[in-house]
Length: 171
Image 1: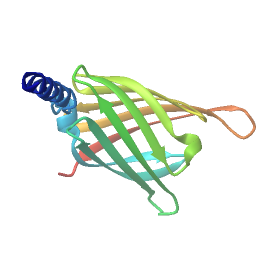
Image 2 (image 1 turned 30 degrees about the vertical axis):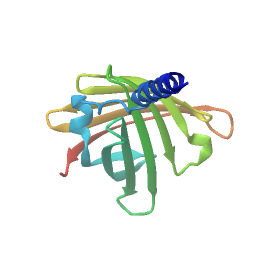
Image 3 (image 1 turned 180 degrees about the vertical axis):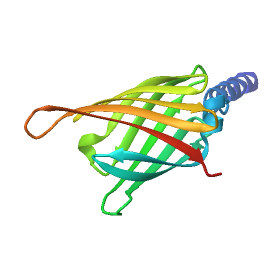
């Protein structure tokens, strides 16, 4: 009986060790683009005819598995603001899945897929209101973001907006 109990306890111990090893989080990601994009960046863009001063804060979080981007854009006359938050998950091969949340609410929450290739992240996203394509490229010490969005207005007509912002790192 003691031998059976010892065998049972040994089996349980080995199984729990194996299960615990499988539950360990992955190693932190070490993707150069993600490491270099961390920090606070400022730039200026044009949105719906207004010049916008933008600040983005990029942080690697949750064991460096996710990049969060918090954006605030304020028009020069301070009459318009836009805020958004992106969460970008990446794997070691550079494949990206994203989610974007902003002032426009649940109807504009988007999800996307893309890829990090060297110093460029490309992303295609969709929301209930439309689609967008975005690139973020680190070049010459600057972060260049280009995007195009397409959606249908209240009359059902397709609208397209695009922009390019060149950001400078503050810290």
